[in-house]
Image (cartoon, rainbow, N blue to C red; front, side, top):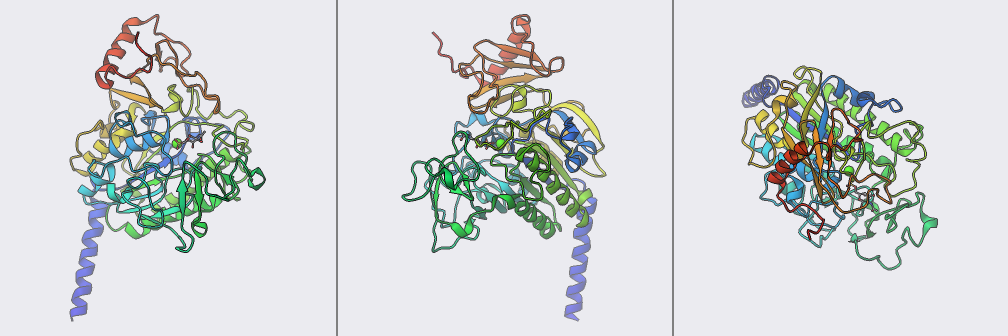
Length: 507
Ligand code: NG6
Ligand code: CA
């Protein structure tokens, strides 16, 4: 009798739960799929002709495909900071490319995207690249590593600490190094090598991938990295398995958490260096490993979408796809990315790339897909990853703490043509300003071309002003011919950014 009642009760609960999931369009699952260094021109849905990305193209062609979608910054850490906190990364001087040993740069008191979702009753998780620091300084990698993603809003966190090219080259599962043998503890240093450990610099004979610049410290799996690491052998990841490994974690998460709404941040590692396609994809693009790992990422997303469908939650799941910064070919290893590029243009028609103030640094593929709810559309609304916090708060019906994030939900869902009015963009410690079709880059001192990555920095001692609609490749600097427009943008930029942005010493 009792058992029967319990079963009935459970069944009733299940029905209620299921109908809440099915009927409550305000509480869909939300998944952010975030690639690393994928350029505006790297997808067939964004005009690539030399690479075919059919699975990602589904998200673009059957969702809202943005042509003016931005990361806040032209590198990883600051963009991820903006995405997760809604705060412009230039407000936090620590939000710069971090070493693998850096402390956490989001405070545990700060508002974050996952915390906002938790207020709405969501389960929250990250699978993939973190790169926002861990611990409070001097992390002991052999104990519980904290604070980290779990302390800033993620119930579950399965991550790589920094980047694939930085130590420690291990996965971290809710604060613990996955697969660590306590008899072989891990030590990490970004200052000096551990005695007797080979390095890329001194032991090129032990490397299978040659370093071009940086990347000549500890060697793991034949790949020389940034930073020194000792021990933790059993826990070290296999580079060529990383995509499959994260995919499986993301799939398992979905399968085990589908009963009530979840927010999943699936932060993939491709096509950042070192580009290590699984043998299934090696050579498939004809473009070298960079092209191969883009095909691999596309496959992973196809598999992941299949899981959502098989689990019956595809139509109750909103997916945002984007990239943390623009493309780069040469980023530290000799991996044929430049040699085999052929006719492919990773930044599309845009100028510059990763690290650049020119548009390809921050304008990235950006789409919102929600099967059955969001109608296919190409939108030229100005949208930024920083706006997910306020917009998703609107979607799920809670208040997010005020930040730089703007509620542009109607634009994200393709219901309105206008997104945000303007945005301050960033590359390194330099910022620019876009409003409407116009972008203004103030004068800075610095190299016009990166000596190592061969990317144009966008830096100039003169003001630059471009009309991106008429001149998406930023060829015609209108600063001199249109001083009125320049001054308008400059005044607005300074009203947000303050006057203390320049690195040119005033006389
Ligand atoms: C740079 C690395 C580059 C890449 C980048 C971070 C050197 C010379 N270059 O410092 O290879 O790791 O940091 O990329 O070490 S990001 O996408 O995570 O910002
Ligand atoms: Ca990146």
